[in-house]
Image (tube, rainbow, N blue to C red):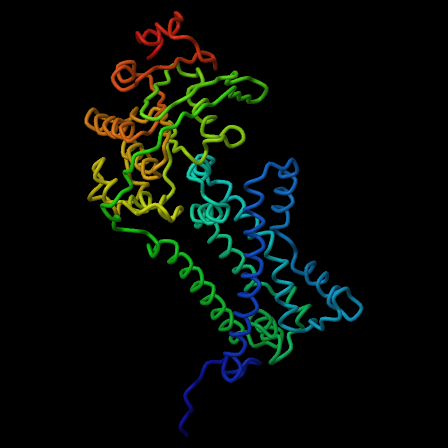
Length: 456
């Protein structure tokens, strides 16, 4: 007698057969996918708020969120069951033993996990990068997208962890959904049912399908992280805004900065005009960098000139993935600026590096690129903090030439430096700072600074 060929146990003996397997898989994806999307939207939004505020209760919120990573599914199931039952708060929705109820249960279950991991990722976006967004006058919406862009790998991992827990969960969906055939049965509850009736081979095969779905989702999200769909590889055009600035005189009065009860800057007043380069000199720790940050509106409230200046910090950071992206950033944030990538790249030797990743640049290249990014903002005031400290002689000459050309266009420049030769070579006048106070040029300390006796 001829034997019939054996078929998969899942298709022959299991409670879930070949006719409704696809239905169970789709229901699983809809339930867990919807819960992940809903939890992700609310959790990432809340994480953005928490990463940018200074609430005193943040440590308590963080500890609570982390404690809820291990929230028991049965506890969530009971709570949602009571809320959706006939006499519950939301009983009128009639969501008990429905897919909607299961989505609610899974959303509450994975929300703390997505929130905590996203919050950590967004807080790792450095304060220096947030300073770049502020100085470049990005709108609130643009800053949200830029922060998410910088933290996208951590956010992706948060979503992946949330989806992984949702799709593997069984307790809450069993209680809220009831494991009703053709209505609320999903892969995890099917595995439990097959095991309970002794169909271990069928349960194993369903488990393998569940594992394949999880792996496919994980590989898909990881693939999205590393594929450069949004990375600009080519530079923009040679066209740039080089118009002459109108005459101006910017004045900062009584700038004061205190940190931890210590006065770092004490009532400093200074001004800069168009067609002028001002050097700021002082010993290390004298307050040069803090004074420039205060002028840029980064220490206290924004100043009257926050929208008229560009700032380069002593240790500049880049926020985009490629050189071309970095040079394009100003035009992305402000529609009135052209994408003049080729023009600015040619100023400091980046013509052939448009597609190079910024995390592979040397310290000197980062410094030059940050200067070009500031120059591309086309602001009438440049605040530069040790902008040539990492550069060789040839690069210093290029930067100084651009500073002089900027002054000739009517711009004003304030730059901090330890180099007395650079100050005398480049500046129209020199300001001296000592212990957080501007001092007169005839002061003995000023003479020592200019002579290099107080500069390493």
